Image 1 (cartoon, rainbow, N blue to C red):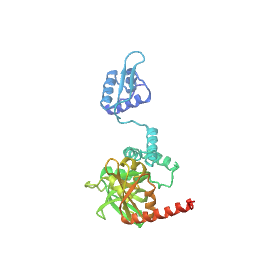
Image 2 (image 1 turned 30 degrees about the vertical axis):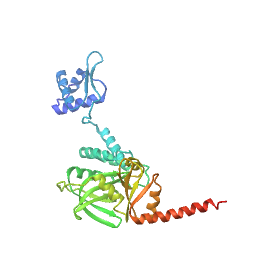
Image 3 (image 1 turned 60 degrees about the vertical axis):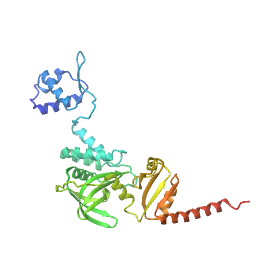
Image 4 (image 1 turned 120 degrees about the vertical axis):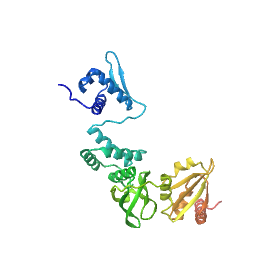
Length: 325
């Protein structure tokens, strides 16, 4: 039975599908499957190579066309089951189950979700809802919320949502700029239209996120990672401490999470830590637990608390040692 006649683009995609389905094809076999001549097969193979697919051709007995490993990643051709599997895995990675892949997973998932047929999207959603991940107390983030925001950022579209802040719920209209993952918590850096300023939002506190197609012209924005880091480590607190630490910046960053404070180099052997807190006593306790010598630069009240704590600890140590004799 002759193969149906395909247009050039459809034939290229069909050729790619065949090459992915088994290790080796002869030119004659491909010609029969595609309904063309072996000369057309050679021409189509060259078009695949131009697109970045490393198609090898080996002559002689046992030879044929093979899809090899290339230097860059060309477009992938996925069947329904493969697309669903990739989308499910990306959703799990976006939720933080794969360390270091959260942001990349969201970007990739946004691209895939844009072209995923509705029938496959429903399968992905069903699998995702029936999957339980053993997580800690970290708040979960809805996958649909992530995708809606990611697509809005990509298309420069405003979003609206309800935000459950500690001081009470509110309705927000923003221009989304960047998604930032820190640990296993997601934040959005956006320009708040009603407050006429940049703001950060925790995704697990966002509900009813919608993008209605209102486009905006991107404005000059702060560095997303640095802005979010400062916002979550300083802005919510009553006190902000500045401490000079006798250790290199990279060593301090390995001990102090980005969600706790910001670290800046102060020469090759010292670093400046800025961190916020609502209780000076707890701040003194945590800073005193760092494995290096520290110098408190600000605020002065933190020094007073540390002196009082040091005196109490000294008395407790002396009482535990007992009278000398």
